[in-house]
Amino acid sequence: MADFTASDAAEILLMIRNKFLKLVIIIAATWAISFTFISDYLIETMRNHLLPLGAKLIYIYPLEGLILKLKISLYLGFIAGLPYLIYIIYRALKERTELLENVTISKGSAFKYGIVSILLFILGVAYGYFLMLPVFMQFLYSNAAVQGVEATYSIAEFISFIILMLAVFGAVFQLPLVMIFLVSNDLIKYSTITYYRRHFYIGFFILGAAITPPDVFTQAMVAGPMILFFEISIFAIKIIFRKKIKEEGVSQPA
Figure 1: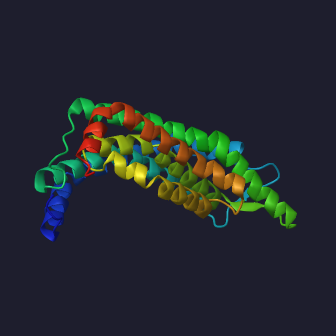
Figure 2: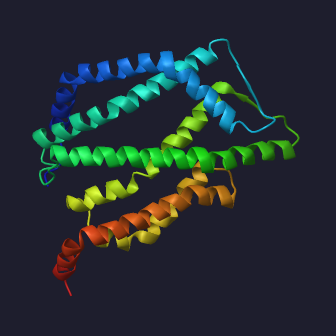
Figure 3: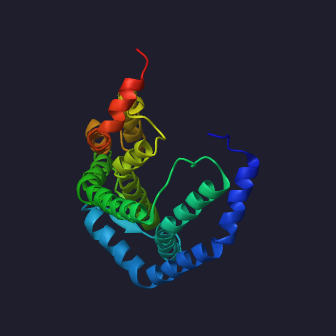
């Protein structure tokens, strides 16, 4: 595989720039629709479902609510434009460099990857919204109550935190798809994944500790799905690519 050079990066940026207008249109259209019809509903829903009983939301400055709506709409716009951005980057890497010379994705495969990715993202968001975050937010509220402090949150900080956590879980649940893609295109070997299995576990718990309070239960609720999906990924790879894995094992030096 050839090295990635500055000229490669320049060509990729040029190709992305030429297609940038379409991406901006997608983001802007989604942003406008979301700001008008969706943002208020999402804010109200998250407030009703995830704000602990007894906690309060406040505006710190007059434009906080408006800016929050703008941010949520922009996030949704980026999500809508992300598939097209990924496609642009893939085409640029495929056509302008040799980094993906061994990677071929048909339209049918891309459609399947897209559908599975969306389903996994929704599953991750559902896990975070209905299982993880209610426990997490209640823990934070209880901790404040024990310290004798009234829990009063800025609405922008509260909603932004919820969105960040949901995005993390949505990304975590993409792990099986990412690993299957990497192995199927020979970008990583099955033996490499299994060899560094324990290292992945440690990394998952470090990530769980970084984004949750110093509480073993909530950390486990973050690291647990990562480990589960990692193992599911390994099992799926072993079944789907058993022939390739067998050939890989035979090719290893004695």
